[in-house]
Length: 166
Image 1 (spheres, rainbow, N blue to C red):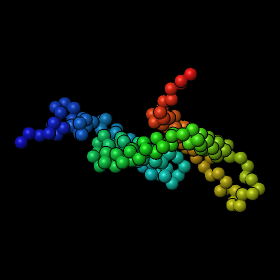
Image 2: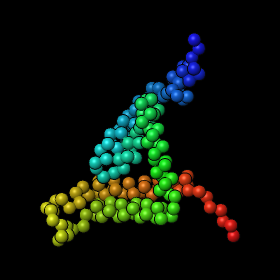
Image 3: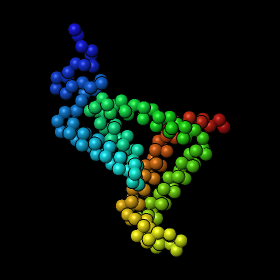
Image 4: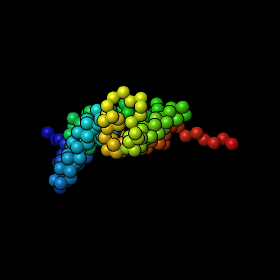
């Protein structure tokens, strides 16, 4: 019984996986390490400051090159993310609010890193005022920059081009 073309083995490039060649050797190990590391960082960043969902999706994207289960998990996430991105840039108000949110996140990251003096209104012990310093602040700043980059990407990809009719 003949095999489906996608099930044939490639002679020198590894096995065929969903229409692509599956990496072998060092590139496979590198992909697995990077993918699982991104998944772990993403899971940690879900509860810590940082781009948790982004890292988790990036890890799944890398692992989807190796595992069919990762491809299955990635498909609906990707579909929902693109739908949300298109909705987010549908009008100018949404875009302005998104950039404002990224700017606020950036400013909070800078404030967190600079560590101003504990204000008089702070009800907790002084050690609980902005713990972590620049390690947390830089994660917030990175999140803000990534958010701004994704907003720009969404505008370019999903926002309809308005032709100038003057």
